Image 1 (cartoon, rainbow, N blue to C red):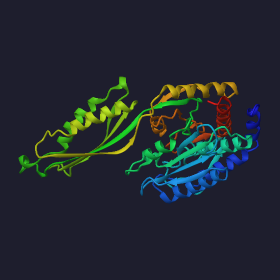
Image 2 (image 1 turned 180 degrees about the horizontal axis):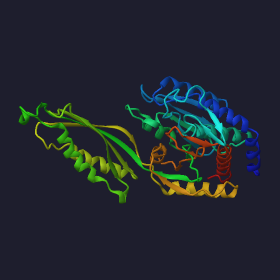
Image 3 (image 1 turned 135 degrees about the horizontal axis):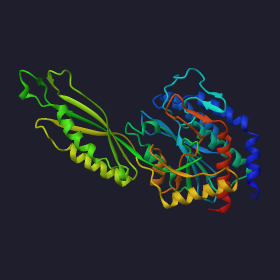
Length: 392
């Protein structure tokens, strides 16, 4: 394995056209998070691609309304612990939003639904495997875990998070192939997000003729929300955002119904649980007799916390990148969520934002830097090869 970096880089340089052909095909094979047929087609395509490289793959269902998890392993009988590439196959952009065959390249940038978030990362992982296979890498199994419902935070009662944690058990480390950052930073922590839907039922009445008989659902909701928003603690990175509120039918009627959606953010799993408990205590109180309150957690992605093992992995990647000429890679903590959280909860040292670099994900302006596809494929192939050399 000595001198592997020259072999890896030469191999991938020779695969540049193939990388972009695969990238184009995967982008044009759209996979909107709510288009289950499209998600299934992409999952089958990726399953075929990875199986061609020697993976044993399964598509694991997580619920009837969500895309499946693609799990695969290469070299299960190899001596070391598996090295994991993870992420998601779904995108936020509805099918055909950008017309037929939306992939395009202009002035060194690549555009299309999911080009950055995060199909570029999936394609990178595929070509990392191709390079390692060509090199004869055999010191660790390689695993993949790509889910189909990350963009909806595994809602609809899906068991995705449980599947990810179970499938990740025993891995040496994980590279979450999410959106890469323009400044080459590596993500070592992310806030978690929990969405709470609250509904209050009151009693409708005529505001002029029978005001006293009414039980105002909006006022009951306001009294609760007024307390909930005080739980924001910016010093400890805990926030409560009242995002939407709807209720009532006319100004002359006491409203019988009100609904609100609340966004909770926290940087630690324990803080999120504390925040939820405090909110549940408030929602259990009744301020206006005759009203009732119901709530549900409609979306949740737990925080991705920084651990000592995370920092050891980051430092290894940082030093390897410097050793082989991939530039400075500072670490960063981000506000958005990712499944790196569940891999870390499962005890796997994980770093995130390992995919193609770019910006404006989740918007019509989303783009990836074309050169970073090849750059990141070389980087992670070298990192994995170095892990094998170090027998880490």
